[in-house]
Image (cartoon, rainbow, N blue to C red; front, side, top):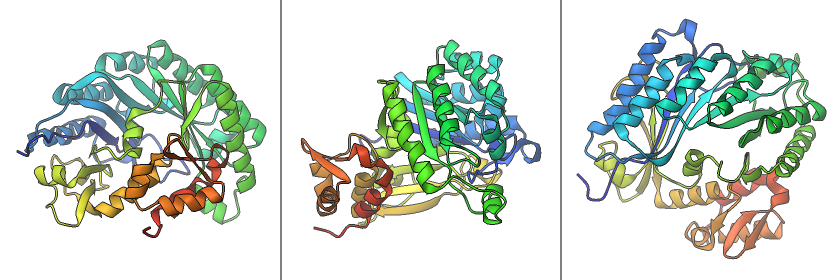
Length: 393
C-alpha cells in the first residue's frame, strides 16, 4: 500500500440506458427495450464495478461528490436509489457531500423523487433542453413542457437542489422562444443552469437531416445572440456565470464538475465512463505502471453494455506527461470565471500566450490571476486552444 494515498474522493457512474434515443445525442446509451441486460442487472453491475475499486490496494476515502449520469439514470426506477445508497454505504460520504443524479422528466415521477433524499441524493440535474413543445419535438425528447415543470416542482418540494440543462440553436428556435425557456427556468426557482449550444454529432439522426437539407438550424450569429441574452438574463436573476456554460446562485455551483475543471482525481464506473488518476494512484491501484514521462493517467471503460458492466473491465489508458498535465490544467482552469494563478500559467508555459490573448482583449490579468474577459466568453475556444498549443516561453 502506498503511504498517504487513498482512492479519489470523486466518483462518476454512467448508466447506459435511455427509454429512447434523442435525435441529437452522441453519448453512449441503449434503449431499454433493446438492451440485452434488464435494468436491475445494470444496477447490480454498476454496484459491483464500483465496489471493485474498494478491493484494490488503496484505502477508501469518503466521497466528496458522487454523480450518477448517463444515459438516463431515472429509467432504473427503484434501482436508482438502491445504486446511490449502496455506493454511499460502501465508500462513505463526507459531511455535506454533493450527490447528484441526472434525470429526464419522462422517467422521474413523484414516487421516485420522494425516494431520492433518503438514499443520500442532494441534487438533481434535469435534462429539459427547452420549455417549448415544438422544440422538444424537433429534438425527439420523450417529455413535454408540463412534465418538465411538474418534475422541477417535485424536486424542489423534496428539498433537493436542482440544475436544469437548456439548449440553444435548436431547429425552429427563435430569440423569443429562447427567452421564454430561460424565463421558465428562472421562475421555477432553479439554483443552477447549464446553458449550451446544440452540437451536431456525426451519425446522429439530426445531423443526417441537417446535412440532407431537411432541417435548418439557427445561424451562428443567432446562437451567439441567444447565449449573450442568457448571460444577461441569468445574471439579473441572481445566477452568476462561474464556468463558460454554467450559471448558479451562490452555493449552488456543481462541486463535481468543478473537480473535473480543476484537475482533481476521480473514478469512472460503467460503460463508456472515464476516470482520471495521478500516476502514483494509478500504479498503486494496478491500473498503470509509473514511467519517467507519465504524470497522469486517464482511463475509459468499454462502451459496451456487457463488457462495460464487468466487475473488473479492461480499461483503455491514456498517459499524460507532466507538460500535458500542466497545459490541460491551465486550459480547463480558464473555463472557470475564477481563472488560473500566475504560478500555474508560468508552470504551464502559457504566460506568453495569455499575454497575447490579453493584447487581443480576450483575457484579463487581475490581482495575480488570469481570467476570461467577461464580455468575450463566446471566444472561449480560441483562448483554450491557444493555451493548449502554446510554445514554451
